[in-house]
Every structure is written in C-alpha cells, then in structure tokens.
Image (cartoon, rainbow, N blue to C red; front, top):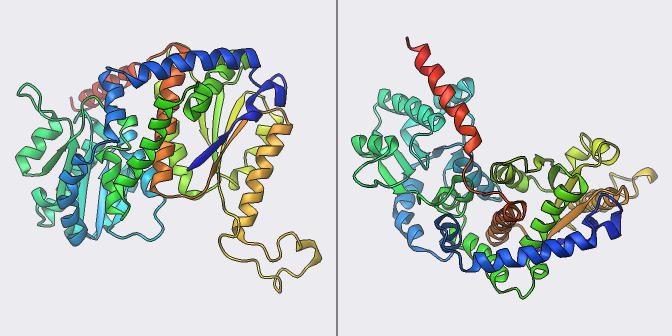
Length: 430
C-alpha cells in the first residue's frame, strides 16, 4: 500500500546532515529489540493499540446507531479536541463522494466561529457527538453545552440528538460527561481507558466519522493490520518500515542536529493526516529535552511559501514527502488552449502530472541540497492505505520514543496549564 524510500536520509547520500552508517546500524539493532518487546507486550496502553485492529465487535455495536443517524440527519457535529477530533478529520479527508450527512469538526472553540456554526445549522436534523476520553475536557464540554441550549430552545430532543464517547464507569463512579449523558438519556459508547486519545484513530473515535461518511472502518483496520503483521514477523528491523523511520528520526536528532520534522503531503486529502501526525509526534516525544518539532507543509502550495527556507535556511530538518501516484489524474491541460511554445511542458498533461512531477522535483532538490528526505510512494488513497499509514506512524512514534529513552504515553507537562486555566475561570466568577 505504500513504499518508504529512505536512502536520502543517510550520510553516504547527502553528506554531514545525514545519518552515518555506524549510527544507523546501531539504531537498527536497538529497534530490533524494541520490535521483539512490542510483539509480546503486556503494557495495557500498547496492547490497546495493537489488539484493536483485530476487533470488529466494537464496530458492530455502533452500526445500528449510525444507520439511524444517517437515515435522519442532514448534519453531524463532532465536538472533540486533539486526537478526539484529528483522527476523524484525517480518516474522512479521503472521501470523494460523501454518502451520508455533512460532517463538522469545530475542534478549536473559537467563540465567534462556534456561534456562527450553531446559528446556521438545521437544528432539527443535526446530530451531535461529543468525544472526551476522560469526560472532563473543557473545550468539547463547553461546545456541548452551547449546542444543548440551542437544541433545547428549538424544541429538540437532547436524548435523541446527542451521543457521547467517553470512558466507562469504573468502581461505581462515572465521569462528568457520562453522568450528563445519563441524566439526559443520551447514547454513550465506551472509550477504552487504556487507549490514549492521539492513538485512538482506529477506534470508534475515528471510525464513527469514517462510517458516517460512507467509508469502511474494517478496511482501515485491515490496512493497519498489514503493517503490524509485517513489524512483528520481520526477521530484521530494516525490513520494518516504521522501525527504519524511527531509527532515522531518533538518530538524526541525536547525531545530526535535526530538530524539525516536516511532513510534506502532495494531496489535500493527506493534509489532515499531517495535522494528526503533528500531535502524535509532539505529545509523544516532546519530553525530557527530547523531541523534534513537527511541521505540516502542503505541496505544491508550500513550495511557494516554505521551500526557500527549507533549501537555503538552517539545515536542521527531516522531510517526509507523501507522494500519491497522480500521473494521468485530474483535468487535462488541452493543447489547443496551452498552445504557446513556452507552455509546451504543460500542454497535453494533466493537473496530476504537474503535481507528481513537482513532488519528485522537491524531493530531489532537497536531497541535492544535503537535506535528509524520505518519500512515501502511495499507489492509491483509500481506507486500507490510510489505515496502514496510521499504524506506521503510531509504531514509528513508539519505537522512536524507546530509542530516545522517553515514554510515548501521557503528556505530563501540559497539566499545569490546564489547572491554571480552570483557576482563572473560577476567579472570574467571584
């Protein structure tokens, strides 16, 4: 479903900003040990990711509820933030002909934008999902309460028009969102307590939006399983693409001064994947002084806004270029319209030909400038391919974390800011 090409990350190909052979080999040896450990892991947070792709029971559990929503709703609003929203956005971005309600992901609680969205929605035919693993995330809760007020005032049915995804009740105690759902008769589905939000894309968190868009959730998991099977049966780490990617990322940070990781997709449908990756990489690896800064760039548009910096600025970046096979795809540039001799290179080509050529040219130009580049060649953009990419980057992140000596789960450094924000809200009421 994809081929990762990494030669242009090595010192032998690009010079001093590449990873040396000695460091690369040492990294592969360490990654092989990590793969062996992961294959038999007992850690609940890792098992939750790996076991999930073999399941179908959770998809069957929500199927009837989703069918009813698709039959009655013109719009579906998904309140979530971070992994609770980005996964669904990334999964549904590949939809070409939506077969279902219009989806809205008001992830950032901008008061003006949220207010305008709620004002223009057809409330009688809109369904609202709220996703919060803990049930206490303030941003989706605030958006939920705003929507509930609108629906209530319009005479709607809160129980019928709202669904929540959150952790189940434990030891007789429910979280805030669970208690709220119970009071108003809202349907509630379980979020696995061991599954971190940024690793939840293949769970119902990401697969419910996918199913509502007419995509096949099982196909995402089949693609993901193919990557996982390869990782756990590969005889050497160099035969496992996520392990190679992790070794390069960790090695370039540690030995070549690479502090920035640029994901550069050449497809609008992969831009949300890059945003999902940005959170996954930043929150998982940004610990104890480690971590490279993840950046999203979109080709070809960011060739015109960023490439000058990438080629002639600080040599501190690893580039990941995602290249679908766009050849012969899209509208044709008709020869009788592009008949100027200066346009011969465009005449008779498709827009896809242009984008494909520019992706190749960007990768080669960066390589010639001595910048480490890896390319993902994608035969197609479908559920299985995207599921494979999701699993690749999750595995790569977990392996890179072990190579760097950090725990990829949790985000302890951000808790202080959350507590302070709540303090300010309490003080504002006095």
